[in-house]
Amino acid sequence: MYPEESISQMVSDGRMTRDLPFPLEEIGFSNMSSSLNPARGDHEFLEDPPTSARDEHLVEISEALRTVAKALRRVAEGKASAQAEAASWKRKYELEKERNSSLKHQEATKICHSGSREEETENLRNESLVHDSSPENSVHCCGKDGICSHETLGDGAVDAVSNKQRRMVTRKASFRLAWGCNGYSSGQHKHEVVSFEKGNITTAGRSNKQILLKWESQPQTVLILAKPNSNSVRSLCAEMVRWLKDEKKINVFVEPRVKIELLSESSDFNLVQTWKNDDEIKDLHSKVDLVVTLGGDGTVLWAASMFKGPIPPVVPFSLGSLGFMTPFQSENYIEYLDAVLKGPMSITLRHRLQCHVIRDAAKDEIETEEPILVLNEVTIDRGMSSYLTYLECYCDSSFVTCVQGDGLILSTTSGSTAYSLAAGGSMVHPQVPGILFTPICPHSLSFRPLILPEYATLRVQIPLNSRGQAWASFDGKDRKQLAPGDALICSMAPWPVPTACQVDSTNDFLRSINEGLHWNLRKIQSFDGPRDL
Ligand SMILES: NC(=O)c1ccc[n+]([C@@H]2O[C@H](COP(=O)([O-])OP(=O)(O)OC[C@H]3O[C@@H](n4cnc5c(N)ncnc54)[C@H](O)[C@@H]3O)[C@@H](O)[C@H]2O)c1
Ligand SMILES: Nc1ncnc2c1ncn2[C@@H]1O[C@H](COP(=O)(O)OP(=O)(O)OP(=O)(O)O)[C@@H](O)[C@H]1O
Image 1: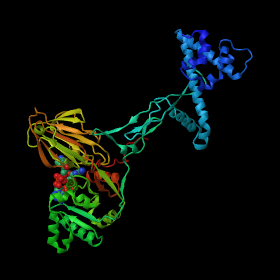
Image 2: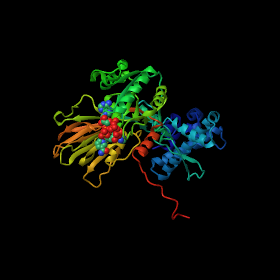
Image 3: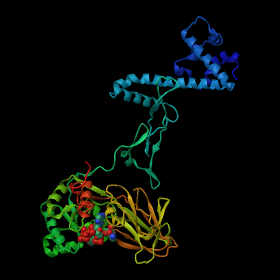
Image 4: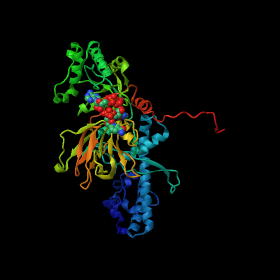
């Protein structure tokens, strides 16, 4: 392929270096082509170098080129040993390049970095490779639709061949993480949770940090929602309205029923605001800074159900029997409300589920214009039917299972301590994002509850061959009949319910399960008895 007599010609016309697998300039043989002067007969050294070198540099070049030329000839002849030689030259080139690059950056790094020697070496190694112009590193990362791993890793392995304890550098393929949301690429908000360290995925921050709400301007308007038919609630409500108006100069909204009750007590409550129809309720979120609930968990659910979109922070006062979501004691309402109105306050962002019912008759059409939002759960059960429910369940496009039993609960983590708990589901901290999938009395020994990720979309289908109907209920209310062929679609809603904490999310949650549910209550075993010595 390369006849010996033509090598000098190939050097002078550039073919020799063009066909090399790497540029010789990069291992220190700079300006090789220009150093060779055919007119002077330099290229003739290649075949017959002089015993006394005219120029040290040219001797170096000629030796290198003779070796390469030999290797190339043998490669052309298909000899395995020549391939190994070429590979060894390539390897030398890579090591040389790495060394040069390290040396080049060392001075600069000495000035810029004050880290340890190991860190410096690691940084240099990474830096030299990141700045490599090879195709896999030339991809520009950190685009707007995701995050990239654009770092590389020195693996620290010892090069046994050279036996020089050189650390080999392996290249780690870069990649991009992108978050899809209903077909759209988005998720910049996820960047705080995931990062890359030397190309490896790590969690940089977690979402379990306590959330604080700080007012940027003074709250002006409070909506009070009160449990009906309770004398204690009625009298506390009247007292609270007076205090808010007289002491705090705050506008107060109450439900029309409550306004009538207040007015029957005194005309002083004339200035309390209310609404006339459901359309006005839709605008409440833009008028109200804070919602106060007086009742039990059901009143918190009631408050959440009034807001089909964004909902202002809720301060739940306990006037019920359990009060899992109502950490504030009504006796101390002045102290608590004072602190809340001043801020900052810890809040729990309680996720809600949004549900759509799709009728077989109107496939692909959503029955209600607005989704039904639930704070606790949506339940699909057998209602009055005496047959087993038969529900086909899908998570995104994957089949999950068939539920044959009394029904299925799709619950938020806030609802995990309500119906789902009674059906055998786990108790989950309300700040954990997820959807609980809990069967009700499944007629199967192996059916255990699941917790699915918060981004999942669940579909519960009543098969056409189901023997009975099913009923869906939303936070225990608004029952809807589902006929064979109908489906319920459920996913995380974009509007969580921010509820004020008495201490913080975790403290309030643990206090509720201990004091409300008497979780793991057991007498402590006495020391008085047999024990390890
Ligand atoms: N077998 C059961 O446990 C069962 C049956 C039906 C409904 N429920 C629950 O009742 C809820 C409706 O509540 P309601 O007050 O309108 O009805 P309700 O008056 O019948 O009260 C139900 C009970 O559930 C408690 N509860 C509600 N939400 C809770 C939560 N997130 N964590 C812990 N306990 C909670 C309430 O304090 C109350 O004691 C439904 O969302 C459902 O979760 C439970
Ligand atoms: N403002 C309201 N208007 C209409 N119904 C309400 C209102 N507040 C609460 N309810 C309903 O009243 C019922 C009981 O409310 P809640 O759970 O708050 O009281 P409770 O049953 O005494 O307390 P607990 O749930 O702690 O036992 C619930 O079904 C709830 O939906």
